[in-house]
Length: 197
Image 1: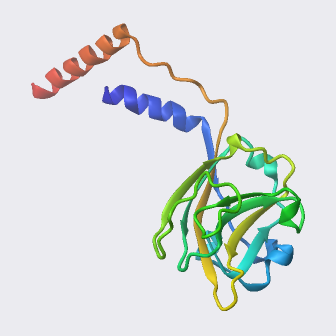
Image 2: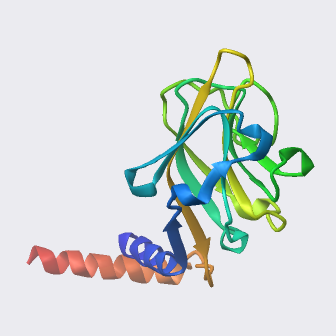
């Protein structure tokens, strides 16, 4: 069984492309009226992004075709839960005109709640979004959100290790039949018997 599992993993690994999103300050800016105070910091060679205050950072331009039918996974943490802590997509500087926002658990129920939870400050959460379940075709920028409009308060959103995984020519590996399982067991027993000699 270990042999089959190893072979199945190898077959699946050969059919997946994966790449990290690397942040560069020259491609980041405030997102229109949603960037009223605060800002962002890029650290760890571009693998980490901190957004703070009351600020939506826009990563643009991006090639949405590289995200369609992909899985986005990353670590997220806030040091102070805000009204909206999350990510999003848009095609202009005004989110009210039809963007897509994933709210990870801020105090407001704004945006898509598929990944919302009761956030605890200073705890890293691993988030995985299958982007194939959402229509991204009209977007050209990605948003990183630390929203806190209340006077005298701020929030932070920390993102690290954003990995985009895209299946390519994925082959469906069927479950092994009885004959194949029997052959694998017998091969394993034969190998085990040879090792004992």
